Image 1 (tube, helix red, strand yellow):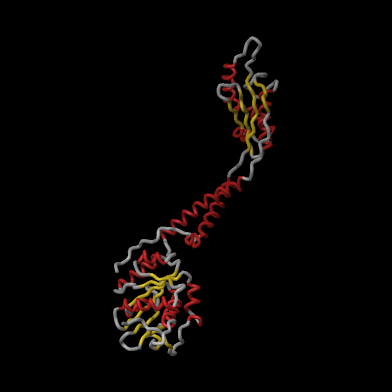
Image 2: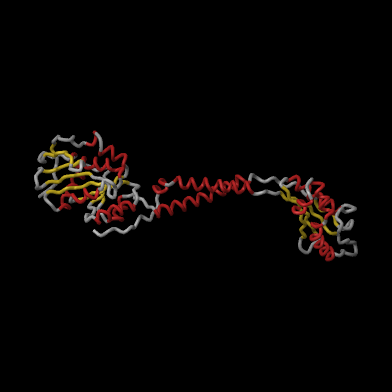
Length: 386
């Protein structure tokens, strides 16, 4: 078999979301906190405005000098924010310094009209309204406070209203941040799944390695016997040794149980006695057959490859190598294990896929597994050696 190339599954299903759901929550929490913090740092100002108009002095026979009024309004829009007397008048009414008033008071002229909007902004809505009203009073009084305004030139149209108080901007910022965090979390999850793909189906093992794969969660004795016969054929010898290796160290006990189960769960009146013994490396071995050099199959569980226990050594001593892989295992770990064994001159012949290691341990390990204790003989079916 050729060395497999890393071609991890490209889909991201619900299992991928279930594995890394905490990443989405973390992104939501982080961005929501950032939005809340950003909103807290911003200074929120209320803006109030009074409306005044430059009189064109119309009469019944004369519409007035509307053009001159618009030109004068444009002049007032530029000069009033710099008028020291008017600024001091506003500062006295709002209880603030002229410096701050200068930066918060503004005048806007509607294009080609004599209307002026006297605007004042402040952190307090009532202060903003007081500033705009003081500005209007300072330019429309019989004796205007503003030094550049003649009496009667400007008339009041509408006094400023108190601005409506805004909703809590911090909560709004946190909500916007949470929405952005949801999108960010999903993007990070997809990127992580593609960078570090996992095996969620038995088909993923086949796609990655081209090695035959069987699901063993619900395996029956008849199906198990069929697998034994198939492994015996793969061995191409009269006496075949099968090594069942776990992909990772936390599956060693499961691999042990699987080896025991395959050797002790098949009964046939014509079967040869089965002996449970320990191999030279103290790994459990299940012998099936007549115990002689002909027509026999032995099962031995080993350690994962690449670790201190060196499962590669067990693979070299065996004729057939079976790898136990659980759902959620890293795709790169599986590819690496296959490559390591091939570097030692022995390819993986079969993969046993486990959907739920916890359920599988109950089935293949302990008293309910059905294998015989050490040193006890029982009748068991041997693989077809004809």
